[in-house]
Image 1 (cartoon, one colour):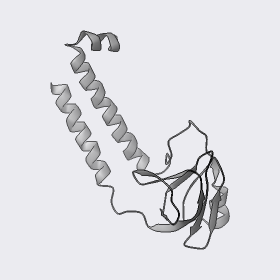
Image 2 (cartoon, rainbow, N blue to C red; image 1 turned 90 degrees about the horizontal axis):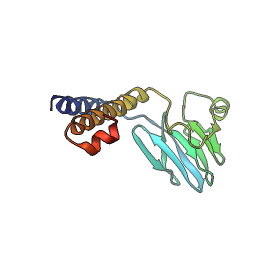
Image 3 (cartoon, rainbow, N blue to C red; image 1 turned 120 degrees about the vertical axis):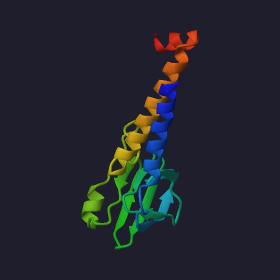
Image 4 (spheres, rainbow, N blue to C red; image 1 turned 30 degrees about the vertical axis):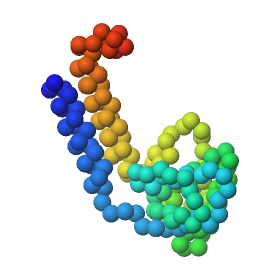
Amino acid sequence: MKKFTFGIVLCAFFSSTVMAQGTPAPTVGAVSGIDGLSTVSQGNTLSNLTQGQTILQGARVVTSSTGTVRIVMNNGCVVSLNRNEAVTIDSRLNCGALTAGIVPNNVGGAVAGATGPTNAVNGSVLGGAFFATGLVFKDVSKNNSAAQALSGS
């Protein structure tokens, strides 16, 4: 039972860390053209892109095998992604550098938005959740022969 309580406390700590991330990133552009499916991860959210949607500093835009997207930055730079491409939006870069940052979207690779300072927090949350799940499973497995068979104990 002590392990279970510790797991809950650990999860509560890491989830409060996520909530205390500070002020939202500034809006640096908007979607001016979209075809097919494209997604954006901004902060802790992942959503499908829509026409006219605002883009925040640090957002990760990813196109699918059917998607293309055109983003007009507040500084006038136009970023166009073809099918299976991704870019992390950084308004501090000039147009050439931002366009050069467009990379192939390796399907089955890393999760969208897997760069930047929030990953330490996201990784901590996931690590805490997996740790707590393992503690609960371990505690339950002491009294459950099916769980013991699954865990190999």
